Length: 468
Image 1 (cartoon, one colour):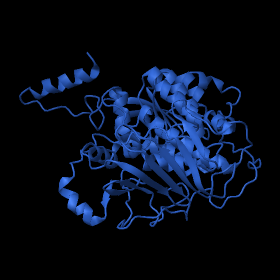
Image 2 (cartoon, rainbow, N blue to C red):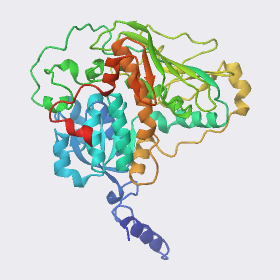
Image 3 (spheres, rainbow, N blue to C red):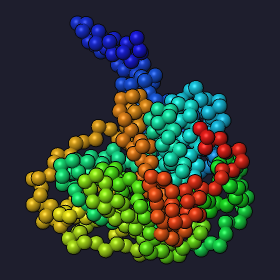
Image 4 (cartoon, helix red, strand yellow):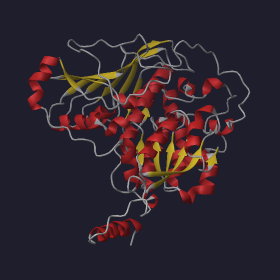
């Protein structure tokens, strides 16, 4: 008999005895939430500072996980101290490969709260060893890496969750309910925008950054992982990596998954046929532009018409809003961008245009609203009930590890979305229109663009992760 079944049967038996009180959970070996440690998911956390720390706290806060290992390339740096203090007796590592070698039989799942370019080797090793994976968005740095990760999820049959929290909150369930009820139908255009300041705004570079002394707490070689060697510079770490094509995926990779995720899934957008950078300010081959407007053209799908999705980023590159737009939609769970606080007039969001209705929305969990407000009031009685989420995004992952739920942002769902964003990043990098063949998964009008779908070869010693 499983220990969990034994505990359940014991509690029932005790309850049936006259004059005998139910024993407290602590006596039965249960935690405060009534779950035995042996029934929790043993979790190894890779990347424990900044966003990685937030992930660990959220997963641990569900009461469904035991934190059994901590790994960070800069263990002991100021941004990692809070988690180290929170779990003082948990084994610590600077190299995730060493952690797998020494403790691989002691954990069930991993988190990857690390820079975009280093998601891939960590998650591929984890999946190949049968470990479940929670990885921040975007899933990976290149189109090809995402392709390999989707294949690995199927091959190794593990639970995989990408960290776009809106997939477990009101935005997700409302979009599905409204789509199923025919409220959202015949969508022909979507405008998506993120106009807050970013780290690279105002930057001008002509080359990679000059060498600086490596901090004593840092394993720089491990931080670089699959990337080709660069001299250490603090301008690459603690979120600044997102500014560089070499390491990150810019504003689109950072916020696109929080803004267009539900539309991509429930409108079954798949892959675009074209990505056109129709506006670009401050183009650079090294860092992301100061502003850009990207037009993604999606073909007809089943009984749904062709759709144009236009992405706007840059502080002053704001889209035109339709009449009756009103106040912006703000999500309850929206974190500030890594460059600072959200500007109250520049909440990220989206506008969805159908043949009959116009909807406005925000990012993350923010629900859609019909505009103008008079139209929303007229339709209020026609709107379907939106079910409540059965679990948070973090609890959903841990329950999926235990076989109790399915990941709502599994790689087969999140992967194509990330590939759309990867194509957008290539259009920004090359500042050229890309024609994409979705069947062959090739860019047909740019040899360099097609090569960049795969990206540069991995650094020597890191090739094996592309063969798992």
